[in-house]
Length: 123
Image (cartoon, rainbow, N blue to C red; front, side):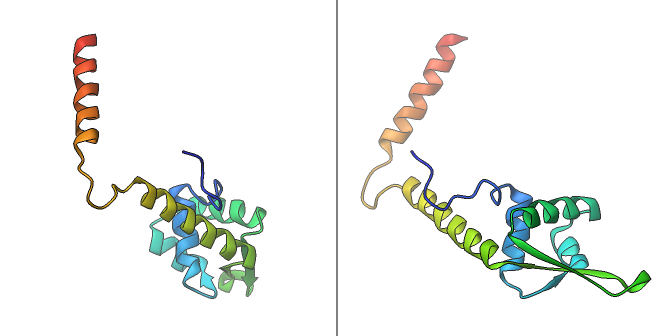
């Protein structure tokens, strides 16, 4: 099976996908909100944000000074387009893997049994 159009290797890792999915539902989000929502450390989130920013998928904004300094983040148009394309590609993969309505699953079960028998023969 070939990779569907829109599948984005940069977004696909679970942490980045979680970040982008969270940001897709907001305009701007505070760094702390994203960190806490995804249960990430500051350094882990910072690394992911900088990777996504480097690809042009995020806009980062630093506001305030000193102890009141905060970082805000949002998806750029490019990031939103990439996310939408990736979600569509994942849906295409999942829909392609689902058995067609009205078919029986005996071929899949038979293949699994054959693989198990083959593995048993090797032992």
